[in-house]
Amino acid sequence: MADKAATVYQHGTLSLLVPGLFTGTETIGTLLQHGDYGIGTLEHLDGELIIVDGEAYQASQDGLIHHLPASQTVPFATVHFDQPRSTVTVHDMHQMDVERYLLNHYPYKNVFFAVKLTGEFSHMKTRVVPKQSQPYPPLTAASKVQPIFEQNNTHGTVIGYFAPPLFSGVAVAGYHLHYLNDQHDFGGHILEYALTSGELSIQPFAALHQHFPLDNEDFLKQNFDYGSLDASINQAEH
Amino acid sequence: MADKAATVYQHGTLSLLVPGLFTGTETIGTLLQHGDYGIGTLEHLDGELIIVDGEAYQASQDGLIHHLPASQTVPFATVHFDQPRSTVTVHDMHQMDVERYLLNHYPYKNVFFAVKLTGEFSHMKTRVVPKQSQPYPPLTAASKVQPIFEQNNTHGTVIGYFAPPLFSGVAVAGYHLHYLNDQHDFGGHILEYALTSGELSIQPFAALHQHFPLDNEDFLKQNFDYGSLDASINQAEH
Image (tube, rainbow over all chains, first blue to last red; front, top):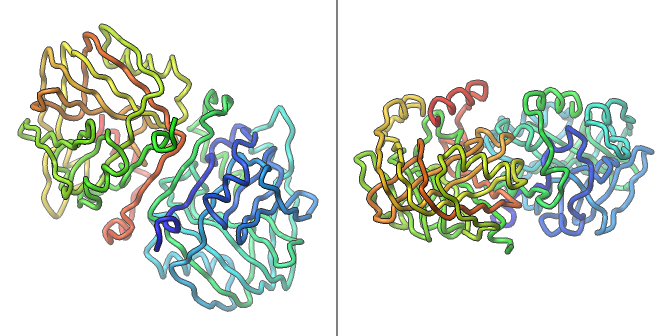
Protein backbone atom coordinates (compact mmCIF):
# COMPACT_ATOMS: atom_id res chain seq x y z
CA MET A 1 0.00 0.00 0.00
CA ALA A 2 1.50 3.32 -1.04
CA ASP A 3 2.13 5.85 1.69
CA LYS A 4 -0.49 8.20 0.22
CA ALA A 5 -3.18 5.54 0.58
CA ALA A 6 -2.08 4.78 4.16
CA THR A 7 -3.00 8.26 5.41
CA VAL A 8 -6.37 9.75 6.30
CA TYR A 9 -6.40 13.55 6.20
CA GLN A 10 -8.69 15.65 8.37
CA HIS A 11 -9.15 19.42 8.35
CA GLY A 12 -10.59 20.84 11.57
CA THR A 13 -11.92 18.75 14.43
CA LEU A 14 -15.42 17.64 15.33
CA SER A 15 -14.98 19.59 18.56
CA LEU A 16 -14.65 22.95 16.88
CA LEU A 17 -18.18 22.56 15.55
CA VAL A 18 -19.55 22.17 19.10
CA PRO A 19 -19.33 25.87 20.12
CA GLY A 20 -20.39 26.94 16.59
CA LEU A 21 -17.14 27.50 14.67
CA PHE A 22 -18.83 27.02 11.28
CA THR A 23 -16.61 29.37 9.25
CA GLY A 24 -14.99 27.70 6.25
CA THR A 25 -11.23 27.46 6.78
CA GLU A 26 -10.12 25.21 3.92
CA THR A 27 -11.22 24.93 0.29
CA ILE A 28 -12.55 21.88 -1.47
CA GLY A 29 -9.66 22.39 -3.89
CA THR A 30 -7.12 21.87 -1.09
CA LEU A 31 -9.08 18.96 0.38
CA LEU A 32 -9.03 17.16 -2.97
CA GLN A 33 -5.23 17.30 -2.94
CA HIS A 34 -5.42 15.05 0.13
CA GLY A 35 -8.00 12.54 -1.06
CA ASP A 36 -10.58 11.54 -3.65
CA TYR A 37 -13.18 10.13 -1.24
CA GLY A 38 -14.43 11.69 1.99
CA ILE A 39 -17.09 13.37 4.09
CA GLY A 40 -17.60 16.55 6.13
CA THR A 41 -19.75 19.63 6.35
CA LEU A 42 -19.66 23.04 4.63
CA GLU A 43 -19.26 26.65 5.63
CA HIS A 44 -22.25 27.81 7.75
CA LEU A 45 -22.89 24.11 8.49
CA ASP A 46 -24.67 24.22 5.14
CA GLY A 47 -25.42 20.55 4.62
CA GLU A 48 -23.45 17.36 4.30
CA LEU A 49 -20.29 16.94 2.22
CA ILE A 50 -19.79 13.75 0.21
CA ILE A 51 -16.67 13.30 -1.92
CA VAL A 52 -16.85 10.42 -4.39
CA ASP A 53 -14.33 9.62 -7.12
CA GLY A 54 -12.59 13.00 -6.82
CA GLU A 55 -15.79 15.06 -7.04
CA ALA A 56 -17.34 16.95 -4.11
CA TYR A 57 -21.08 17.12 -3.54
CA GLN A 58 -23.32 18.92 -1.07
CA ALA A 59 -26.49 17.36 0.28
CA SER A 60 -28.46 20.44 1.26
CA GLN A 61 -31.42 20.87 3.60
CA ASP A 62 -33.87 21.21 0.66
CA GLY A 63 -33.07 17.61 -0.30
CA LEU A 64 -31.07 18.58 -3.38
CA ILE A 65 -27.52 17.54 -4.27
CA HIS A 66 -25.15 20.20 -5.62
CA HIS A 67 -21.76 19.69 -7.23
CA LEU A 68 -19.24 21.85 -5.36
CA PRO A 69 -16.62 24.15 -6.90
CA ALA A 70 -12.97 24.08 -5.73
CA SER A 71 -13.49 27.48 -4.07
CA GLN A 72 -16.16 26.22 -1.63
CA THR A 73 -14.87 26.22 1.95
CA VAL A 74 -15.36 23.76 4.83
CA PRO A 75 -14.82 23.96 8.61
CA PHE A 76 -14.48 20.18 9.04
CA ALA A 77 -13.87 17.38 6.58
CA THR A 78 -12.07 14.04 6.31
CA VAL A 79 -10.65 12.59 3.09
CA HIS A 80 -8.39 9.81 1.81
CA PHE A 81 -7.21 8.29 -1.45
CA ASP A 82 -9.38 5.27 -2.16
CA GLN A 83 -7.22 2.14 -2.30
CA PRO A 84 -9.00 -0.56 -0.27
CA ARG A 85 -7.01 -3.28 1.46
CA SER A 86 -9.92 -5.71 1.10
CA THR A 87 -13.22 -5.83 -0.82
CA VAL A 88 -15.95 -8.43 -0.37
CA THR A 89 -19.36 -8.97 -1.95
CA VAL A 90 -22.16 -8.73 0.61
CA HIS A 91 -25.91 -9.38 0.56
CA ASP A 92 -28.95 -8.59 2.69
CA MET A 93 -27.34 -6.70 5.52
CA HIS A 94 -28.49 -3.85 7.72
CA GLN A 95 -26.17 -1.04 8.77
CA MET A 96 -25.49 -2.72 12.12
CA ASP A 97 -24.56 -6.01 10.41
CA VAL A 98 -22.03 -4.27 8.19
CA GLU A 99 -20.50 -2.34 11.06
CA ARG A 100 -20.17 -5.44 13.23
CA TYR A 101 -18.84 -7.50 10.30
CA LEU A 102 -15.97 -5.09 9.70
CA LEU A 103 -14.92 -4.98 13.34
CA ASN A 104 -15.23 -8.76 13.74
CA HIS A 105 -13.44 -9.77 10.54
CA TYR A 106 -10.58 -7.26 10.47
CA PRO A 107 -8.12 -6.31 13.26
CA TYR A 108 -8.55 -2.55 12.94
CA LYS A 109 -10.56 -1.44 15.98
CA ASN A 110 -7.60 0.62 17.29
CA VAL A 111 -6.86 2.59 14.12
CA PHE A 112 -8.75 4.76 11.65
CA PHE A 113 -10.22 2.98 8.64
CA ALA A 114 -12.34 3.97 5.67
CA VAL A 115 -15.54 2.14 4.73
CA LYS A 116 -16.89 2.13 1.21
CA LEU A 117 -20.04 0.24 0.29
CA THR A 118 -21.33 0.47 -3.28
CA GLY A 119 -24.51 -1.32 -4.23
CA GLU A 120 -28.27 -1.57 -4.14
CA PHE A 121 -30.11 -0.54 -0.99
CA SER A 122 -33.73 -1.51 -0.38
CA HIS A 123 -33.91 1.38 2.08
CA MET A 124 -31.74 4.38 2.90
CA LYS A 125 -32.51 7.06 5.50
CA THR A 126 -30.41 10.22 5.81
CA ARG A 127 -30.45 13.58 7.52
CA VAL A 128 -28.95 16.92 6.53
CA VAL A 129 -27.82 19.70 8.88
CA PRO A 130 -29.50 23.01 8.04
CA LYS A 131 -27.53 26.16 7.09
CA GLN A 132 -26.77 28.54 9.98
CA SER A 133 -26.15 32.27 9.99
CA GLN A 134 -23.85 34.40 12.13
CA PRO A 135 -23.65 34.74 15.04
CA TYR A 136 -23.55 30.93 14.87
CA PRO A 137 -25.39 28.95 17.56
CA PRO A 138 -23.74 25.96 19.22
CA LEU A 139 -23.95 22.62 17.42
CA THR A 140 -26.63 21.21 19.71
CA ALA A 141 -28.98 24.09 18.78
CA ALA A 142 -28.00 24.05 15.10
CA SER A 143 -28.64 20.32 14.80
CA LYS A 144 -31.81 20.15 16.89
CA VAL A 145 -34.15 20.13 13.90
CA GLN A 146 -32.81 18.40 10.81
CA PRO A 147 -34.70 17.37 7.69
CA ILE A 148 -34.79 13.62 7.16
CA PHE A 149 -34.81 12.01 3.73
CA GLU A 150 -35.62 8.46 2.63
CA GLN A 151 -35.28 6.52 -0.59
CA ASN A 152 -36.14 2.91 -1.40
CA ASN A 153 -34.37 0.75 -3.98
CA THR A 154 -31.55 3.21 -4.37
CA HIS A 155 -28.17 2.44 -5.94
CA GLY A 156 -25.21 4.40 -4.68
CA THR A 157 -22.19 4.73 -2.43
CA VAL A 158 -21.82 4.72 1.35
CA ILE A 159 -18.56 6.41 2.28
CA GLY A 160 -17.08 7.26 5.66
CA TYR A 161 -14.78 6.35 8.51
CA PHE A 162 -14.31 4.44 11.69
CA ALA A 163 -12.34 6.33 14.35
CA PRO A 164 -11.01 4.64 17.52
CA PRO A 165 -12.60 5.92 20.77
CA LEU A 166 -9.27 7.52 21.80
CA PHE A 167 -9.96 10.14 19.12
CA SER A 168 -13.47 10.97 20.33
CA GLY A 169 -13.95 14.71 19.83
CA VAL A 170 -11.14 14.89 17.28
CA ALA A 171 -13.35 12.84 14.97
CA VAL A 172 -16.69 11.08 15.43
CA ALA A 173 -15.79 8.05 17.59
CA GLY A 174 -16.92 4.85 15.90
CA TYR A 175 -18.55 5.02 12.48
CA HIS A 176 -19.44 8.21 10.62
CA LEU A 177 -20.98 7.54 7.19
CA HIS A 178 -22.53 9.57 4.38
CA TYR A 179 -24.43 8.43 1.29
CA LEU A 180 -24.75 9.60 -2.29
CA ASN A 181 -26.86 7.79 -4.87
CA ASP A 182 -25.68 7.22 -8.44
CA GLN A 183 -28.15 9.73 -9.92
CA HIS A 184 -26.76 12.40 -7.57
CA ASP A 185 -30.23 13.44 -6.44
CA PHE A 186 -30.31 11.90 -2.94
CA GLY A 187 -27.85 11.65 -0.07
CA GLY A 188 -26.75 12.92 3.34
CA HIS A 189 -25.58 11.75 6.75
CA ILE A 190 -26.70 8.14 7.18
CA LEU A 191 -29.24 7.32 9.89
CA GLU A 192 -29.94 3.76 8.74
CA TYR A 193 -29.96 1.54 5.70
CA ALA A 194 -30.76 -1.96 4.43
CA LEU A 195 -28.48 -3.34 1.74
CA THR A 196 -29.69 -5.74 -0.94
CA SER A 197 -26.26 -6.48 -2.42
CA GLY A 198 -23.01 -4.61 -2.86
CA GLU A 199 -19.24 -4.41 -2.67
CA LEU A 200 -17.88 -3.64 0.80
CA SER A 201 -14.36 -2.26 1.13
CA ILE A 202 -12.15 -1.53 4.11
CA GLN A 203 -9.00 0.60 4.07
CA PRO A 204 -7.05 0.87 7.33
CA PHE A 205 -4.72 3.83 7.82
CA ALA A 206 -1.24 3.85 9.33
CA ALA A 207 -1.53 7.60 9.87
CA LEU A 208 -3.93 10.42 10.64
CA HIS A 209 -2.85 13.75 9.20
CA GLN A 210 -4.79 16.15 11.41
CA HIS A 211 -4.81 19.71 10.07
CA PHE A 212 -5.85 22.71 12.21
CA PRO A 213 -7.14 26.13 11.06
CA LEU A 214 -4.06 27.82 12.52
CA ASP A 215 -4.89 31.19 10.94
CA ASN A 216 -8.49 31.34 12.19
CA GLU A 217 -8.66 33.69 15.17
CA ASP A 218 -12.03 32.46 16.41
CA PHE A 219 -10.64 28.94 16.63
CA LEU A 220 -7.44 30.03 18.36
CA LYS A 221 -9.38 32.10 20.91
CA GLN A 222 -12.13 29.57 21.63
CA ASN A 223 -12.38 28.37 25.24
CA PHE A 224 -13.46 24.81 24.63
CA ASP A 225 -15.59 23.21 27.33
CA TYR A 226 -13.96 19.78 27.32
CA GLY A 227 -16.15 18.57 30.17
CA SER A 228 -19.37 18.79 28.16
CA LEU A 229 -17.88 17.91 24.78
CA ASP A 230 -18.92 14.26 24.66
CA ALA A 231 -22.49 15.00 25.72
CA SER A 232 -22.86 17.73 23.07
CA ILE A 233 -21.40 15.53 20.35
CA ASN A 234 -23.62 12.58 21.26
CA GLN A 235 -26.69 14.80 21.15
CA ALA A 236 -25.78 16.28 17.77
CA GLU A 237 -24.29 13.33 15.91
CA HIS A 238 -26.41 10.37 16.94
CA MET B 1 6.86 28.76 7.45
CA ALA B 2 7.54 25.78 5.23
CA ASP B 3 5.03 22.93 5.32
CA LYS B 4 7.64 20.59 6.81
CA ALA B 5 8.14 22.90 9.79
CA ALA B 6 4.36 23.25 10.26
CA THR B 7 3.90 19.58 11.09
CA VAL B 8 4.56 17.69 14.30
CA TYR B 9 5.00 13.95 13.78
CA GLN B 10 4.14 11.35 16.39
CA HIS B 11 4.67 7.61 16.29
CA GLY B 12 2.44 5.64 18.65
CA THR B 13 0.15 7.18 21.24
CA LEU B 14 0.62 7.84 24.92
CA SER B 15 -2.33 5.50 25.50
CA LEU B 16 -0.63 2.45 24.10
CA LEU B 17 1.97 2.69 26.87
CA VAL B 18 -0.77 2.46 29.53
CA PRO B 19 -1.44 -1.32 29.21
CA GLY B 20 2.29 -1.97 28.68
CA LEU B 21 2.81 -1.95 24.89
CA PHE B 22 6.53 -1.16 25.20
CA THR B 23 7.73 -3.01 22.08
CA GLY B 24 9.67 -0.79 19.69
CA THR B 25 7.66 -0.28 16.49
CA GLU B 26 9.63 2.43 14.70
CA THR B 27 13.35 3.09 14.34
CA ILE B 28 15.22 6.23 15.31
CA GLY B 29 16.33 6.33 11.67
CA THR B 30 12.73 6.67 10.49
CA LEU B 31 11.90 9.16 13.24
CA LEU B 32 14.76 11.42 12.16
CA GLN B 33 13.24 11.60 8.68
CA HIS B 34 10.30 13.39 10.33
CA GLY B 35 12.19 15.78 12.57
CA ASP B 36 15.48 16.91 14.08
CA TYR B 37 14.17 17.71 17.57
CA GLY B 38 11.89 15.63 19.74
CA ILE B 39 11.16 13.43 22.74
CA GLY B 40 9.80 9.98 23.54
CA THR B 41 10.72 6.72 25.16
CA LEU B 42 12.57 3.60 23.97
CA GLU B 43 11.81 -0.09 23.49
CA HIS B 44 11.20 -1.79 26.86
CA LEU B 45 10.43 1.72 28.24
CA ASP B 46 14.21 1.89 28.58
CA GLY B 47 14.66 5.52 29.56
CA GLU B 48 13.87 8.92 28.08
CA LEU B 49 14.47 9.89 24.46
CA ILE B 50 15.82 13.35 23.67
CA ILE B 51 16.49 14.38 20.07
CA VAL B 52 18.55 17.55 19.67
CA ASP B 53 19.98 18.94 16.45
CA GLY B 54 19.32 15.72 14.52
CA GLU B 55 20.98 13.43 17.07
CA ALA B 56 19.08 11.03 19.32
CA TYR B 57 20.06 10.41 22.95
CA GLN B 58 18.85 8.10 25.68
CA ALA B 59 18.77 9.18 29.31
CA SER B 60 18.90 5.82 31.07
CA GLN B 61 18.00 4.81 34.60
CA ASP B 62 21.67 4.66 35.67
CA GLY B 63 21.93 8.41 35.08
CA LEU B 64 24.02 8.08 31.93
CA ILE B 65 23.33 9.52 28.49
CA HIS B 66 23.86 7.31 25.44
CA HIS B 67 23.96 8.35 21.80
CA LEU B 68 21.43 6.18 19.91
CA PRO B 69 21.99 4.37 16.62
CA ALA B 70 19.48 4.60 13.74
CA SER B 71 18.48 0.98 14.39
CA GLN B 72 17.21 1.63 17.94
CA THR B 73 13.41 1.27 18.13
CA VAL B 74 10.75 3.23 20.02
CA PRO B 75 7.09 2.57 20.95
CA PHE B 76 6.22 6.27 21.32
CA ALA B 77 7.98 9.44 20.20
CA THR B 78 7.21 12.93 18.92
CA VAL B 79 9.46 14.94 16.59
CA HIS B 80 9.48 18.07 14.43
CA PHE B 81 11.84 20.11 12.30
CA ASP B 82 13.07 23.00 14.42
CA GLN B 83 12.06 26.31 12.83
CA PRO B 84 10.67 28.51 15.60
CA ARG B 85 8.06 31.13 14.84
CA SER B 86 9.32 33.32 17.68
CA THR B 87 12.37 33.39 19.97
CA VAL B 88 12.82 35.66 23.01
CA THR B 89 15.58 36.09 25.58
CA VAL B 90 14.35 35.27 29.08
CA HIS B 91 15.83 35.56 32.58
CA ASP B 92 15.16 34.21 36.06
CA MET B 93 12.10 32.10 35.43
CA HIS B 94 10.83 28.89 36.92
CA GLN B 95 9.20 26.19 34.81
CA MET B 96 5.71 27.44 35.73
CA ASP B 97 6.60 31.01 34.66
CA VAL B 98 7.79 29.81 31.26
CA GLU B 99 4.73 27.65 30.69
CA ARG B 100 2.34 30.46 31.66
CA TYR B 101 4.29 33.00 29.59
CA LEU B 102 3.93 30.98 26.41
CA LEU B 103 0.19 30.45 26.84
CA ASN B 104 -0.38 34.10 27.80
CA HIS B 105 1.74 35.70 25.07
CA TYR B 106 0.89 33.49 22.11
CA PRO B 107 -2.54 32.39 20.80
CA TYR B 108 -1.74 28.69 20.54
CA LYS B 109 -3.62 26.99 23.38
CA ASN B 110 -5.82 25.05 20.91
CA VAL B 111 -3.03 23.61 18.74
CA PHE B 112 0.17 21.64 19.22
CA PHE B 113 3.34 23.70 19.64
CA ALA B 114 7.00 22.92 20.30
CA VAL B 115 8.94 24.56 23.12
CA LYS B 116 12.71 24.94 23.00
CA LEU B 117 14.63 26.64 25.80
CA THR B 118 18.41 26.78 25.56
CA GLY B 119 20.40 28.38 28.35
CA GLU B 120 21.79 28.30 31.86
CA PHE B 121 19.73 26.67 34.60
CA SER B 122 20.53 27.23 38.28
CA HIS B 123 18.61 24.01 38.97
CA MET B 124 17.26 21.14 36.91
CA LYS B 125 15.45 18.06 38.23
CA THR B 126 14.60 15.10 36.00
CA ARG B 127 13.36 11.56 36.22
CA VAL B 128 13.98 8.53 34.02
CA VAL B 129 11.66 5.56 33.50
CA PRO B 130 13.37 2.24 34.25
CA LYS B 131 13.73 -0.54 31.66
CA GLN B 132 11.02 -3.22 31.75
CA SER B 133 11.10 -6.84 30.66
CA GLN B 134 8.42 -9.06 29.10
CA PRO B 135 5.71 -9.74 29.99
CA TYR B 136 5.49 -5.97 30.35
CA PRO B 137 3.59 -4.55 33.34
CA PRO B 138 1.13 -1.67 32.88
CA LEU B 139 2.56 1.86 32.82
CA THR B 140 1.40 2.68 36.36
CA ALA B 141 3.43 -0.26 37.74
CA ALA B 142 6.42 0.40 35.45
CA SER B 143 6.60 4.05 36.43
CA LYS B 144 5.94 3.67 40.16
CA VAL B 145 9.60 3.87 41.14
CA GLN B 146 11.73 6.12 38.97
CA PRO B 147 15.25 7.41 39.63
CA ILE B 148 15.42 11.17 40.05
CA PHE B 149 18.42 13.24 38.98
CA GLU B 150 19.42 16.81 39.79
CA GLN B 151 22.05 19.18 38.52
CA ASN B 152 22.80 22.79 39.47
CA ASN B 153 24.26 25.43 37.17
CA THR B 154 23.71 23.31 34.11
CA HIS B 155 23.75 24.60 30.53
CA GLY B 156 21.60 22.75 28.04
CA THR B 157 18.36 22.40 26.09
CA VAL B 158 14.77 21.92 27.20
CA ILE B 159 12.76 20.41 24.34
CA GLY B 160 9.19 19.26 24.18
CA TYR B 161 5.58 19.96 23.30
CA PHE B 162 2.30 21.45 24.34
CA ALA B 163 -0.74 19.40 23.31
CA PRO B 164 -4.31 20.75 23.55
CA PRO B 165 -6.53 18.89 26.06
CA LEU B 166 -8.65 17.49 23.20
CA PHE B 167 -5.68 15.20 22.45
CA SER B 168 -5.34 13.89 26.00
CA GLY B 169 -4.34 10.24 25.74
CA VAL B 170 -3.11 10.66 22.17
CA ALA B 171 -0.31 12.80 23.57
CA VAL B 172 0.43 14.17 27.04
CA ALA B 173 -2.17 16.94 27.47
CA GLY B 174 -0.47 20.23 28.29
CA TYR B 175 3.33 20.38 28.45
CA HIS B 176 5.66 17.41 28.12
CA LEU B 177 9.35 18.41 28.29
CA HIS B 178 12.72 16.65 28.36
CA TYR B 179 16.20 18.03 29.06
CA LEU B 180 19.70 17.33 27.82
CA ASN B 181 22.74 19.27 29.00
CA ASP B 182 25.48 20.44 26.64
CA GLN B 183 28.04 17.94 27.97
CA HIS B 184 25.57 15.13 27.24
CA ASP B 185 26.01 13.63 30.69
CA PHE B 186 22.72 14.65 32.32
CA GLY B 187 19.09 14.73 31.21
CA GLY B 188 15.66 13.12 31.34
CA HIS B 189 11.95 13.89 31.73
CA ILE B 190 11.70 17.29 33.42
CA LEU B 191 10.15 17.50 36.89
CA GLU B 192 11.16 21.12 37.58
CA TYR B 193 13.75 23.73 36.75
CA ALA B 194 14.91 27.26 37.48
CA LEU B 195 16.33 29.20 34.53
CA THR B 196 19.03 31.83 34.95
CA SER B 197 18.96 33.06 31.36
CA GLY B 198 18.25 31.59 27.96
CA GLU B 199 16.58 31.71 24.57
CA LEU B 200 12.95 30.60 24.55
CA SER B 201 11.37 29.50 21.26
CA ILE B 202 7.84 28.58 20.29
CA GLN B 203 6.82 26.77 17.11
CA PRO B 204 3.09 26.23 16.54
CA PHE B 205 1.98 23.46 14.20
CA ALA B 206 -0.78 23.54 11.60
CA ALA B 207 -0.82 19.75 11.57
CA LEU B 208 -0.31 16.65 13.65
CA HIS B 209 0.88 13.66 11.66
CA GLN B 210 -0.16 10.80 13.94
CA HIS B 211 1.39 7.48 12.96
CA PHE B 212 0.14 4.13 14.30
CA PRO B 213 2.01 0.79 14.58
CA LEU B 214 -0.40 -0.80 12.08
CA ASP B 215 1.71 -3.97 11.78
CA ASN B 216 1.99 -4.61 15.52
CA GLU B 217 -0.46 -7.36 16.50
CA ASP B 218 -0.36 -6.64 20.23
CA PHE B 219 -1.43 -3.06 19.52
CA LEU B 220 -4.17 -4.09 17.10
CA LYS B 221 -5.57 -6.65 19.57
CA GLN B 222 -5.36 -4.52 22.71
CA ASN B 223 -8.66 -3.86 24.47
CA PHE B 224 -8.01 -0.35 25.74
CA ASP B 225 -9.77 0.66 28.92
CA TYR B 226 -10.71 4.18 27.90
CA GLY B 227 -12.55 4.80 31.17
CA SER B 228 -9.42 4.56 33.31
CA LEU B 229 -7.00 6.04 30.77
CA ASP B 230 -6.82 9.56 32.18
CA ALA B 231 -6.30 8.36 35.73
CA SER B 232 -3.49 6.00 34.68
CA ILE B 233 -1.78 8.67 32.62
CA ASN B 234 -2.00 11.24 35.39
CA GLN B 235 -0.48 8.81 37.85
CA ALA B 236 2.38 7.88 35.51
CA GLU B 237 3.23 11.19 33.85
CA HIS B 238 2.88 13.78 36.63
